Amino acid sequence: MRQQLDQVGTLDLIRHGVEVLGLPKALKLAEFKPAFGLNPQVLARYNANRLRVVRQVRYAFQE
Image (cartoon, rainbow, N blue to C red; front, side, top):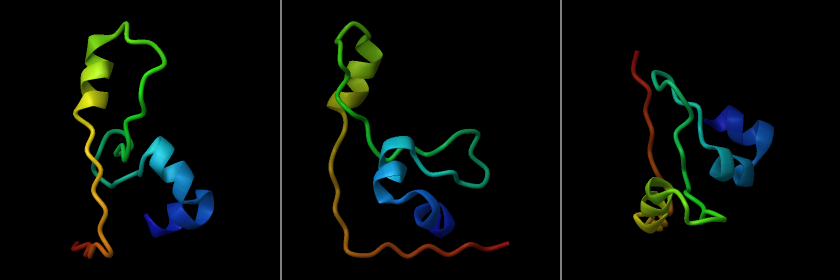
């Protein structure tokens, strides 16, 4: 994740997600309000969105 952050920046990671080993697609960090409310699933994901702010998160990778 640190390499991704250095390469593309914080805003890009928030918008497009983080590549995590073992996940089939990028882990989404944000769900933006849909432009149209035609898809109820997308609207439900947006309404379930909660903001969490933390000072520091520890991450340890074990092989």
